Amino acid sequence: MAGHERPVCRPVSFELHRGEILGLSGPNGAGKSTLLKVITGAARCFGGTIWRPAGEDMAVLDQHPRRTPECPLTGGDLLNACEAKQLPAPRILQSILPQRLDSLSGGQYQLLQVWACLGGSAGLVFLDEPTNHLDPHAQAMLAALLKERPDGRGLLIVSHDETFLEAVCDRVLQVTPVGAVTGGTP
Amino acid sequence: MTLPWDPLFREAFLSGLVLAPLAALLGCWLRLRGEWLATLGYAHLAGAGGVLAAVLHWPMLLSAMLASALGAVFKWLFGTARAGNEVYGVMILLGWCLGLLAAANHPGADLVGRVFLDGQILYAGRSHLITALALAVVGAILLPRLSRWLLREHFQPGHRRANRQVLWPMDLGFDGLVVLVVAATALAMGVMASFALVLLPAWVAWGLARGWRMVLWLSALLAASAYILAFWVALVLDQPFGPVLVAALLCLTPLRLLGQGRYAAGGHAGDL
Image (spheres, each protein chain N blue to C red):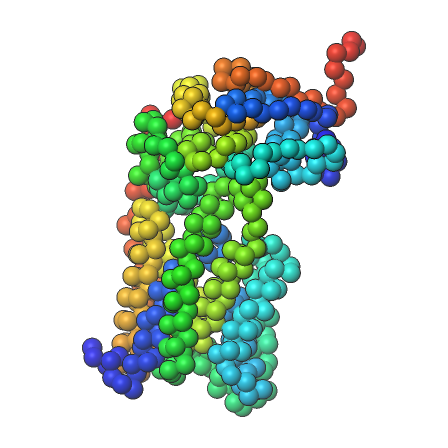
């Protein structure tokens, strides 16, 4: 049961396996992002248990990655800061690495932030609404980025875009908000 | 041009030459965290601490640093480590009224108060130089580690918490370094000059540089250049150092225009 002041989603139980991409889907306000925040320690767990393997690092993409209007750091600086140099950056990102972050489009910045999570050594990667700011072409690039991850790490992706989740995830879990009636007839 | 190397002024000159780029470097991280106004709060409290030290016959530099450190404690009590600017506004007002009231009611403190306002670098002596060098060494050791943490915290604010890493030692280390450098700079060069050293070089570098390393180098270089020029002008023309340094730093700000248009936000046509 996850939430800030009160539980917002129904009890859920799932496992994220190594090498797996698990999607969390559901309507707005269902508590998908809150559930992710509980797992990453940013929101309250009202009950139940979260088990994580000892010594396993996590990387987290926020729903709204911080971006300042003027920022002289480059894409390469961002990857350095996030210790995302474990893997060579994909070809689609190479051209934006020397550019200042404030000169990047919203889609470029989002892809860079996704790779900042994927390019490091974290064994568990959590991406909250990674398709934000991305047009269909960029979403295809994101799908390619996700496929470039090294084997053996688990990815949890929260998104309201079910088509995207179906395309990139091995499993998709539906999150239902507290108070929602499921399976009933009017 | 050789005046700063005169034995009479050498220690004062070197004190400022160490502190000016150090303050400007810290300004880069403060700007990244949106906390650049912290400097004015800490500097005012350091000024008040120095004036009160004159009243109470306490060591001035130590008192200024302690008062500035109290500002950091105040920030921690009334906000988070990423507190808003309102906390610094309160610090500025607190330092301002305490310092001026103490200066108005004690003849010795009045002189010290004016020194803080004018920023008389020539009063800086050996103890100041030793303090500045010690802070530079501490900064050289701490900043590379702190920088990695501060940058990651900026771009991935949930990372440390998700990995159950404690946050406060790094926050404390950075705030502590800022407090000590600002207090030492305010005592040597004046309250407004220390604020200008943190704010202006980093702001100019922000507009011009591409890449974090270049931002740091440019900020430090601009601060050192403005300081050397101001020291020489203040000495030759017999002017109060603080305002001259602020004027020199203000003269750098049009350089930001060189960067305008080169880094327009929003990307390029045809990009993602």
